[in-house]
Image (cartoon, rainbow, N blue to C red; front, side):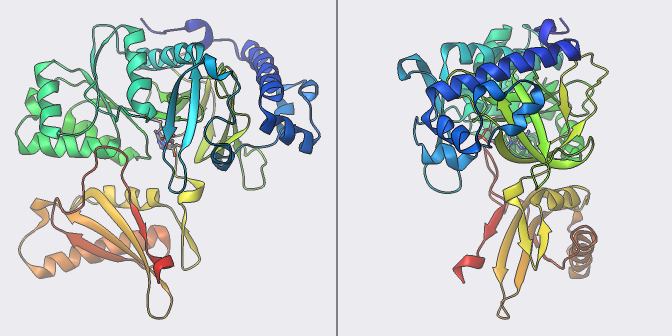
Length: 433
Ligand code: DLL
């Protein structure tokens, strides 16, 4: 089967716009009538549901941010009655209370179908065995994805996270053909499988990576080491969870399910960027009941791509996520994104993929950025001169991209803590000084 819901996946663009407008008008009315927060915000912006006459009118509506969900913790932004909410999930932020999101029974159905669409899109069928190595708690990557696999009719192995050797054993014993995990964890899995000599025993053909940013080089490396095809899955709890955007077999950008989400990519002044330009992804729920977010600022940076794709789907397309607006570090006045550093490191064969960034302030109150990376076993000759040369090379490559001097520290393989979920890459100690 090529498509899960061909009607929506291949809809004529003009018809899709009409559907989006109808659904946008419905969403706006839903929150206006049911969520005091939205009613108040719309009032302040001088807009009512009746003002939304075209899709472009979405720009009259105010933005919503993560802080709005936090300020209305836990259920203040829910658009459905509490008795109609059948499940909650939550995402832990860097500070304060988590963000709580709620789903009606219909939302869970919709979500499962979007995951089933995505899995079908990468060629998986009900004959596949899919291991879900994501945290099964309040995190959406566990149960959210799980129900989608079941919806498609494939066999789901709810492995959750932890015990990497056991994860590999399950993959071998159960004939697992696809795995869903964070890209950070995939490195850990690959490393462990190599150490235990298990790579040849695996029968994985696809991996679905999501939950955090990763790069094209990471794809190349992991595809080679695990002998599979790796696909990008984007999502956020505020919109659903995994499955908001997903790559097809072209592996060239993510399809955003346009019947469910209205996409804007905006510059720092809130203006729509032109095709191919970088900007912040802003999403509006078009088909949600429990939590229906209007113009939600994801904080994620992407590019709008031309919507035509050789896979035949007509949805909006975006590039892989290129970092976060708020992840940006300002080091000696220069904007630095962890994703740029990840990209440089992944192109240097003498060092591994694991890295950690430490920001300090030196005695002259100047920022110091230290990058800890692991030396690959085969790059260690025992000669200090060689180590120094590698260190200089990494520093040089980073300087060329970042335009700032950094301190590179080479560590023994395995020294950087491995993670089963999302990696914590940045330790900022500047405020402590
Ligand atoms: O991470 C949902 C998810 C689970 C997506 C499993 C994919 C797979 P949150 O915990 O709310 O939800 O975090 C959402 O994670 O705004 C991005 O910054 C980041 N993120 C998620 N997927 C990707 C990706 C889940 N493929 C936040 N590439 C988002 C880059 C991603 N960043």
